[in-house]
Length: 349
Ligand SMILES: *[C@@H]1O[C@H](CO)[C@@H](O)[C@H](O)[C@H]1NC(C)=O
Ligand SMILES: *[C@@H]1O[C@H](CO)[C@@H](O)[C@H](O)[C@H]1NC(C)=O
Ligand SMILES: *[C@@H]1O[C@H](CO)[C@@H](O)[C@H](O)[C@H]1NC(C)=O
Ligand SMILES: *[C@@H]1O[C@H](CO)[C@@H](O)[C@H](O)[C@H]1NC(C)=O
Ligand SMILES: *[C@@H]1O[C@H](CO)[C@@H](O)[C@H](O)[C@H]1NC(C)=O
Ligand SMILES: *[C@@H]1O[C@H](CO)[C@@H](O)[C@H](O)[C@H]1NC(C)=O
Ligand SMILES: *[C@@H]1O[C@H](CO)[C@@H](O)[C@H](O)[C@H]1NC(C)=O
Ligand SMILES: *[C@@H]1O[C@H](CO)[C@@H](O)[C@H](O)[C@H]1NC(C)=O
Image (tube, rainbow, N blue to C red; front, side, top):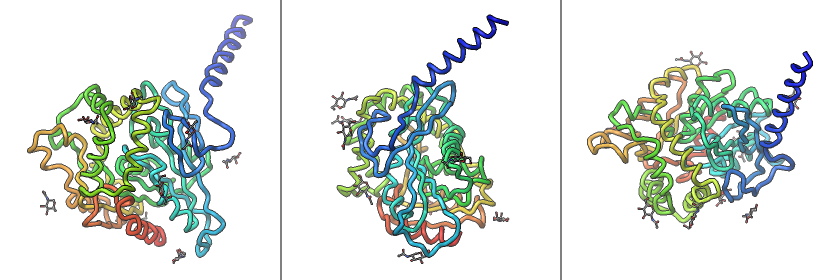
């Protein structure tokens, strides 16, 4: 009995030691921190959720901003919140213009950086899954006592927003997707498997020209504006930051995640979810296209066809807004048109 107590005490002491060694930054939220191995200034204060996940204690960064007193007051119902989910090459901070517009109209905004991304921890090893990201995101919302939110996801964040809505329909008042990926199952269309080690090598070789070249061709319909450089340099801050190697490895795991965890078959599950699907039809994003035979690559990333088919699969609760002339990131390319679509839909839901 005595020795049992001793062991319990020992375990308790050990647990406390581990917990305190992995304490997330506390104190006043900060707009400039080097957390996540990234020196980059965020538009709003950063907070951290302490996640106990997969035998690790990890810090997930997020911004949580309430509307200013000057916000549009024509809506008088309960406080509405929009959770904005970033894609693979963006961060929570990339939503700054959208956050500003939503705040001005009285919405509260929550902007997480997923684990392995941007200001969040980059674990040496992690079982990345869309379900795990959804659970982590829900943990943050729980800690904020949010029980009903609108979710807006871009690219991989759209894939995540879809998974989140399928897992937690009661939490989701409405779903907004802008050029989500995962509208087709790349592997089923013939994209060969590429090892994580191979993807890692490519990730490690990322530099200004490789990132810009990719974004120019997929995001911006082959055009470039100086303002787009901000998002290339933001990403470079992580690729070239103090966690560069682990970041590249985590990103390789994330690429493997989106390749091997298709969501294309499940859009019918959103039939009861009010959904806004916005598609820049000049997008051509397709994971694995770069390492596919030309005959396979040619069949991938036709967003005119994929957008329409996805809207049909969701059904009559989907509002479909195609942008015929825009690429993978309408919110950056034509923010005014994008925000008009978002606000108009939110106003009706
Ligand atoms: C942010 O803080 C770091 C030190 O933590 C500093 O090196 C960096 O210059 C700061 N960046 C800006 C933009 O203020
Ligand atoms: C305020 O909100 C109303 C209703 O949502 C909208 O019609 C109006 O244009 C908004 N006003 C401004 C200044 O944004
Ligand atoms: C968003 O952040 C970028 C980078 O800091 C900045 O260039 C841009 O002006 C910001 N836009 C808005 C609307 O805040
Ligand atoms: C959430 O609710 C609990 C229980 O009512 C309360 O103790 C806690 O302070 C709340 N947290 C926030 C962030 O509002
Ligand atoms: C940038 O990366 C690309 C692809 O990895 C490589 O071909 C190119 O030489 C690199 N450029 C510089 C300036 O390092
Ligand atoms: C960051 O870039 C510089 C210059 O290209 C390079 O010398 C350095 O090794 C890079 N650091 C990391 C952590 O990748
Ligand atoms: C649309 O959503 C509503 C409310 O969730 C639901 O009652 C209705 O059946 C849905 N429509 C279809 C075609 O599933
Ligand atoms: C893409 O899909 C559209 C609509 O189904 C079709 O008209 C068009 O020919 C397709 N484009 C290519 C390059 O296959």
